[in-house]
Length: 416
Image (tube, rainbow, N blue to C red; front, top):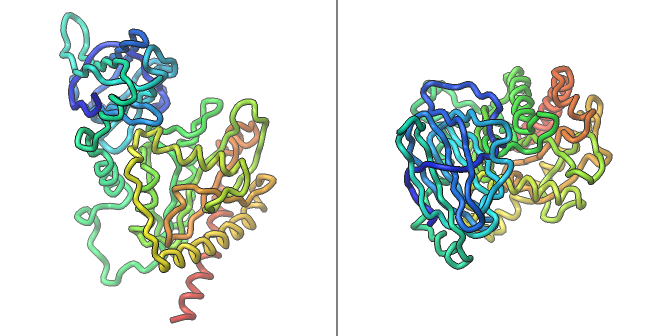
């Protein structure tokens, strides 16, 4: 039922969360032109119209119940709103680029279901090639049995490899090494969300696009000084699992990790505005911080990443000491950052908070998560799309980075 690496055709509707309304069509990529759902709560069919046949891997995930379909990179040209409404066994679905060369469709199910059939139909009788999935209602036991590791495509390594190839150039593709190694401090800038994970949305603006533009501008500003080397976790609309973002920072022996986001209050929960700076804590500083951490930590579930194989924590006193020191530096940078940003940016009423963000859990890299503002607030959204506001905010953040790392470098030099 789950890991069916098959071809498909016929009936469903796709949630256009992960795709832009009018993406640029590249002739090298297959084009998906329509998607439909048909059937009822016993049997539901999904159909994706294509301009050529493709291969795919389909598998299931539990808690929440989902079906994931990995396909080659596709130019999605689906009708606006496709996938936002469900039918039968499918509550909704979304799609988008999940890694270079690969797209993904994620189906949110109403309950346990199995993939009864999955196949791709050749073009015939005036109909285009179609990818088809047929879902059937199943009980919990049958569903869980389908999640056996040997029956599931090993997607996580492929995604991790893609992250490495995009964010950290491969050794073979790197320019010749200089005579002296680059000893400049490394700063990792993490643009939140991406690919099938849009993040928050308001008035036609998606968090993933807003924070990517800001993160790239921050990179350019920091690199201007020539004193630091900047590594991005993503530079385009690609989904990167949370743990892989942390791995990038650790692999680069980063001196600082800055994750960029933009928050939104759920409808009916009032209004809020201003930037907030978060650090890691086992216990959230307040209910709002806990809500946000839970929302951000669900990013992997949105992308369909299997979270059942979480790395076990090593109970070692040296690691514990490293974590404590790292949190001290993280808190120090957060205070510096607030001091610089408050002169140019509207800050939230309680701008320094903490919670259990998975993306901040590198034990040896000082890390902060910056919520630039609330896309649900009209004033904040106007700032987030403003070039002049971005320029001022980027300048204040770059200044905080410079002050923080200058002190750390000076301290390290004094102890040598």
